[in-house]
Length: 282
Image 1 (cartoon, rainbow, N blue to C red):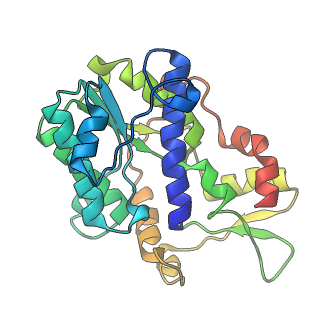
Image 2 (tube, helix red, strand yellow):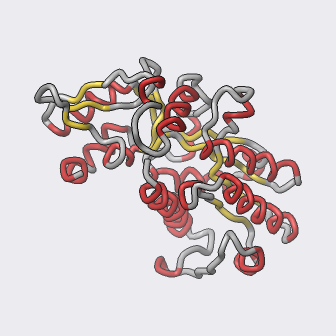
């Protein structure tokens, strides 16, 4: 996925959380929703200190794709962790992921997972009351970088994700906010834990079937292997292939808990139905 798409998802994730909090009327969030906004630069510790001054807690998203620097993402996360510790924040919710390289003893490397894993570990190691939310693959990606591609040898489309027949967890970015809000409202249950968020788990062919129904055109699982995927000529192909290998190991994403945290969470079918125009224009 390109950096622009990830940059947009970062703001969508933060916006989803801010909207849910504002609607819950318990926290002070964004100015354009009728509340207070404070600017902070993750590369500037003094501005982070100013932004978090007097805060009860914080929701943090770091974004590897903004700069493609693993060191910078870890540094940004550690800055917030250090400030949260020194200012005594009561609860930080971090949009984290597993440290795949460590979990697989170096066999796989997924940089945009690994560095978030390092940041998770740092938060907990210095004693910050933190919950990590490990979010499943975004449904929104099927409207953009993962959209079906017209096959060169026929009147059908293909969906190319290196998952084999192993189902993949997914969720809409818009549904993350209410779940995070529920986590903030129950610190005694969630501080110190990692929570895997997922609306449902589907095989790539099941995803393709949903897309076929919406598009009115046949969509097939391309059945691409990680070995073939990593040879594709685009930046990050090897990383995406290793991500597919890791997803095939079935990392912990808790569908039942996600539905408890956000009872209105949408299925992939509901999401695509509501975004049919965007799918057809993408």
